[in-house]
Length: 184
Length: 192
Image (tube, helix red, strand yellow):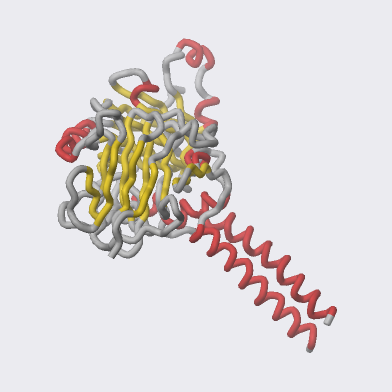
């Protein structure tokens, strides 16, 4: 009887380990995460518009149908990137996600405070290679540090009513995401 | 022989418990960092790098991209104020006010995050589209058949959920109660 209780206790403890291990490993083994779903639809280091979601076709689940969406799937292994996005009349935001879908930075048009949102995206290593004086003089440069080499930049422009969707999509069509090589 | 059987039993039990707990946490959701106001729940930390491991797993498994905290916050509701699960054949009335935000959107999804198919291709409202009363409050009727005023069609589905997204809002990780964020009431109307 005691022996059976011990086997059960062992099973429960081991079950807890299995549970924690699977939860932690899951993001790295998922085959349907946002990055992989977007891979066939988006080029690397360029802005690509996503189709407006409908009940039958949506690239990702839980997309907000009131927004025009464009994605820059990035790879920083060669050079940092420069991202420019004009803002729409209503509301525009730029969100940064790691390869595994963690939202590590997001900014909206009002916080950016300009007619065009301009950001530089780089890894921590690339940032540390920036000349120091440049960092001081360029106080108005917005630098975003990516925790992973690859990831997603998602640009969203609100269409406050269905009729303004073409306008919102047009704003995002002018957005750019391009390699921004470091000197030296 | 007995120890062989015993360890086999232990391993099977461990696999069942461990995988079962993982499956449950991914399908039922967890309470870590949840902000519950009335029938609405948000997980503001899911839009930050402080996202907990369960939410990370859920994000990766479902392929969704959470709303970043610099962008806004998303509140979900699967039940009305009396705890009744939404049924697409019934009427549900969402009324009152929303927390301060530059814009908000209210959208209907099935439990897997797909928009609800309907004959008028209307999947939600934005704060700009909604018709308000003189005092600024509003009422949205979610019903299978057309209604006057702010109507969101369910398409007659069995189960659905509501997502209220606030954009450019002070509501977020620091929000605790309905006083910081007055959420609209959700009441059940007529039901066949």
